[in-house]
Image 1 (cartoon, rainbow, N blue to C red):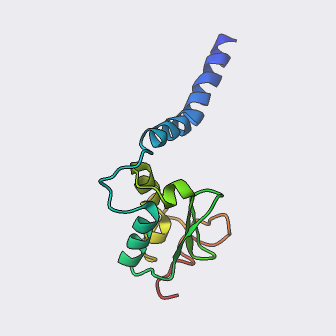
Image 2: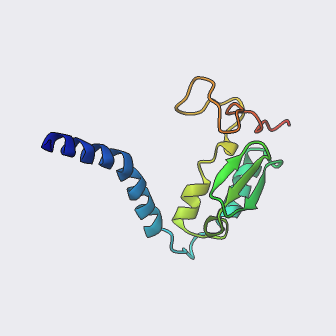
Image 3: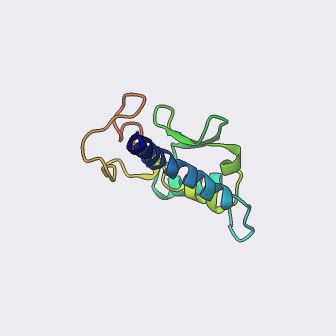
Length: 128
């Protein structure tokens, strides 16, 4: 019985531990930094312009930070959109919208689909 309880605790830590750790680190580094030249929204716009993806918009949302390939929009919560923190930069930087349409996702060499049923590169083609 003790072995089962120990196994449940270990599985719980493996599943939930990274989520709690990430939230703690983001909270720790969410303070505004005066040495950062722009906000999270400005960084997102800069990266999109840098990769010739001016047709993708950067929008404010209340439902969580995400990229919507259907409406071609990077949506950011107010804290990230207006934030000048390490957390804002860290959350904005890895969005799939910045990838070139010909580059495969880093961990998935097969054709993956997202929650809208489109493949990973549909909707982000810079020629669209």
